[in-house]
Length: 259
Ligand SMILES: [Mg+2]
Image (tube, rainbow, N blue to C red; front, side):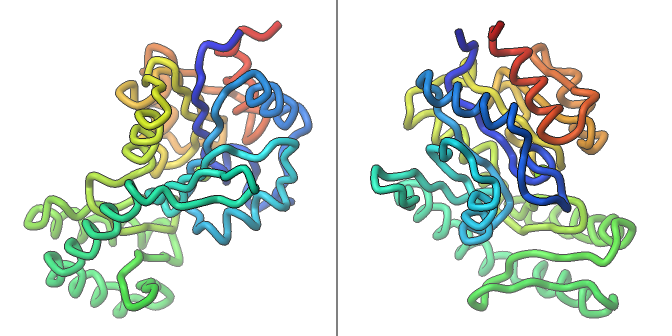
């Protein structure tokens, strides 16, 4: 018996350690096989790009592939019968258009963030295809400093938001996140938040670690403090004392009704 039909797992730090071999435990793999065999829908919800995620899945060597992928913390893909992950256009196209507009409308803020990055050695302002992507900071301390500048600038541009994962930060529109993409997928599948479980370890997971998106919430011991306190405060939250895949599995079993 399952208490949830939709399982959203972050990848790095939640299914696999990082840095690591990219493999998770056999026990968690067995669980994922059981979950999908029994009709559950599994989505990996990550900040990785699609290409990087597919590489990760090759190494991960799952006995069963995820049904769906949410990559870049906002783009949704679903697996076809041929094993290929196809874009969910009805979500991704409006998402891309919203971001095109956002980059135009927030050009002064982006220019000031770029200046900050350029004046700090080893901080990288990342662009892809000429579009702003985010920041890679050489340290957590400098990231905190960058965040202060960003938060100040956002007051004038409230639609401008970000997803943070340790020293990585991705710019985004405030309506696009792991959480909103997961909510869209759940709606498409006809699964309610009451039947959804989310597992994650970092700041970019907070948007899906909320009862409006996922009633059941799990985080492993390596999670950042903000994630642990959020999950601990949730009525159906489970904070494990075990790291990575072991901690995630403990939480999944806790809510699964498995013997
Ligand atoms: Mg993570």
